[in-house]
Length: 157
Image (tube, rainbow, N blue to C red; front, side, top):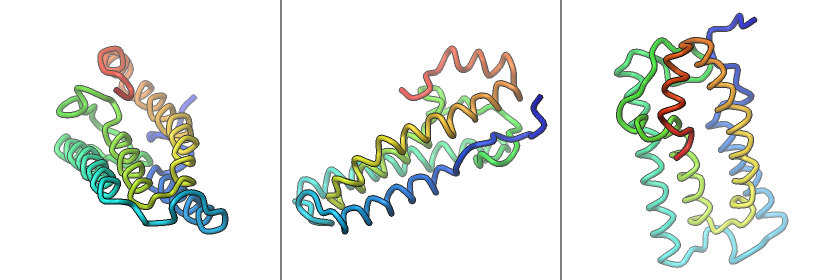
């Protein structure tokens, strides 16, 4: 039986992504692969920055919806409302998609093969250690309303 009124996630997503970036940096320094750290060509720089801008938009604007609904965006705090407006009509996890795009853009800008490789386990940890646990919590908290939302809106895209 659940006793905590919050999602019991394995790791906070910003820490997960920052940890992967840091580990990628260390691996890039110790075992260089590719053109070298932070040496993108003009096209790579533009593409990386574009992914980052879109990612930041996907992370920031949906978070505002939480504040407007009067509920917390932080996974370790209780949810008081389901947010279904804005980007939440298209995906249940726009903030996490935004974090993934920011990370991917940084991989391109920093030209780090290691950071890019680490994106795969990072997304797997995000899925199983955060998203699935949040879904379990929201199902417990909001019951059929959340189940209906899950059936109408995809988890990712």
